[in-house]
Amino acid sequence: MLAIQNLKTCRRCFNIAEDDLCEICKDLHRDQKIVCVVEEPLDIISLERTGTFKGLYHVLGGVIFGGKDENLKISELIKRIKEEKPEEIILATNPTTEGDATALYLKKKLQEYDVKLTRLARGLSTGSDIEYADEITLSSALNNRRELK
Image (cartoon, rainbow, N blue to C red; front, side, top):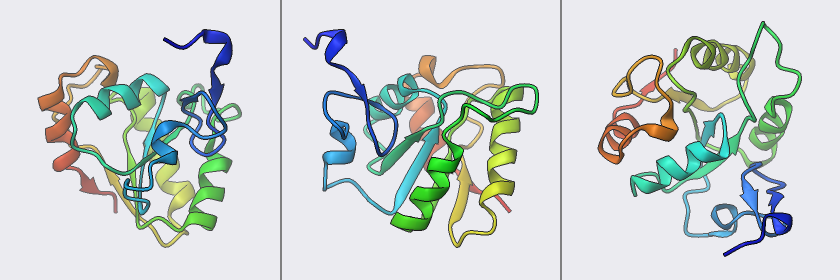
């Protein structure tokens, strides 16, 4: 078991890590062309439990609150898009007012880049957290995601 003092933040996706890169970013068998944007590292754990998603992640570190995005890792996401050129960005924010506002904000910020934007399907109930969703619901939401236009 890891000691908490040995934990870091992954320099690529901002997930919890032991080294500079987390285990997911180190895994070259993952689909490098799909990045799933989540609010918090716990969302990654929930999505990974489904066994459905085989791409990469990007942790925002929260949601837009009161119209402010100052502490979110949005500029780092844009830098990843420019450098890594993923084909698809999945906006997997929670189906809450703040999560939806964050997804809409990201859609506007990212529309100038040549990347397909999708959002998790609404198998998730409004007001719930991804962290507490069961594997079947999350698998359905991932598989039935839709493109944001």
